[in-house]
Amino acid sequence: MRDDEFAWESYGSAMVIRMGAGLAADGRIAAWRHELWSHGHSTRPGRAGSSNLLASWYLAEPFAPAPVRGGSQPAGAEDRNAVPLYEFAEQEVIKHLIKDMPLRTSALRTLGAYGNVFALECFMDEMAAAADADPVAFRLRHLQDPRGRAVIETAAAKAGWTPGLKSDGRNGRGIGFARYKNSSCYVACVAEVAVDHRTGKVDVVRVVAAADAGQIINPKGLEMQIEGGIVQSVSWTLKESVDAQASCSPFCGRSAVPQGIQFVFAKAHEMSDLVDNGDLDLPDQFLAAETVGLERLLKDIDDVRV
Image (cartoon, rainbow, N blue to C red; front, side):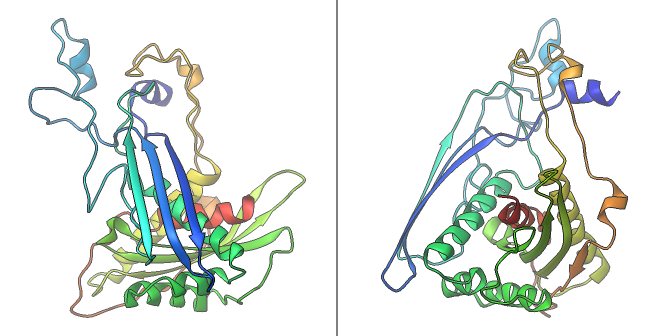
């Protein structure tokens, strides 16, 4: 049964991220600080001298769980995508690895990139507002990478972005940008969102995405990867959550009460005609299109909801 599965399985780590920055007189960011706290994001089996197979912990002669360990740059794990692609005069990124958690955690799609890009891109919007600048123009002002600039410009143009356009209180839009692991596919997303303040219901009306994965060998495959990431992100942001009983064991085994695990996800009919793709085909340049699309959209949706 699904509730039994969720009572035993691992979860993505909770994260806390604190951002700070300062503006120069010319409206550019002069100093940037990204500080994060997170548990480990991978307890996959196979580490020498231990076992991360949950059943092995309950044998008559149990195996020891592997100790929590963090990832390392440039790909990172809990700190994945914490280092910005934007260029600042000074920047500081600090990681705190939390060794003990009330729930067993492991790899959820994109690892820490989901939280880090959400925090980074939301904060770029806050800094743009503080500088009285358009969010698209503000990002381009701090980005020298021509391929990164191209996906932002393409997504904005395809979405009909109007600089300085304000929300009417119900309908709004947001833009987010990242390069997965800072080494793979570039993606920018513009989300158009409507909020019913009476009911609190949030509708994602349209998402425009631009992706650069280098030379496209299988256009439909890339399109499905981008759209899949966007659909999953909408589901994560608006629907999905896990509410576990506080009495759950350190490994979240059977002491987790099945009735305390609640999980809701977006349905296919809710996603019809949601995504508009604008992929860039760059011959003789190759990048991996892995779990792109997720973190950018979470940030876009939150722009309007908050």
